[in-house]
Image 1: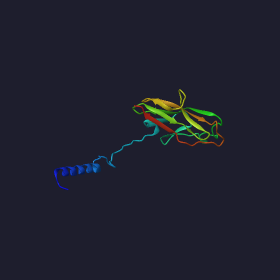
Image 2 (image 1 turned 90 degrees about the vertical axis):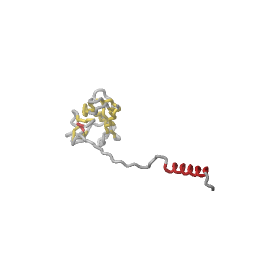
Image 3 (image 1 turned 135 degrees about the vertical axis):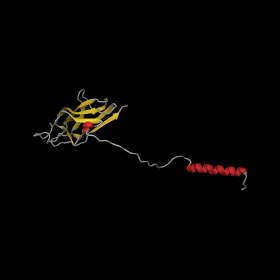
Image 4 (image 1 turned 30 degrees about the vertical axis):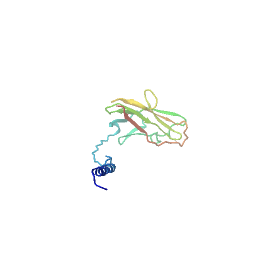
Length: 168
């Protein structure tokens, strides 16, 4: 092939396109960067979403965390809750929004095959699912335990999830 202007330009154009295809996408497969992270941890009563034990003897603060315990030790001489009943612990738990923005609060109840535990608005009733809790507001909760399907040896040992999502 003769080296003339057209062949040189075609050759340079081919190299440019090939190089662009190989290296010119601008994409990368990995980036590693170090950043600092600071996390302050507080006990439940002092956190952004504060959980505090209410007026129930079965809701206590243990090592800075709220614990709901209806086990036989907490019931004194009794062995458990009534079978085939719905037991309500009135104003047993309070949730306070210490965040500087309103939040949408959801507390998922827990259940086993035969016992259900749910959290209800102590003022209006109803489960806590997408409850609007303003900045500085407090919500008193009832804890409702339904043993309608339970047998004498039934028990439940679960973890409750409190979810607060900023609405701003």
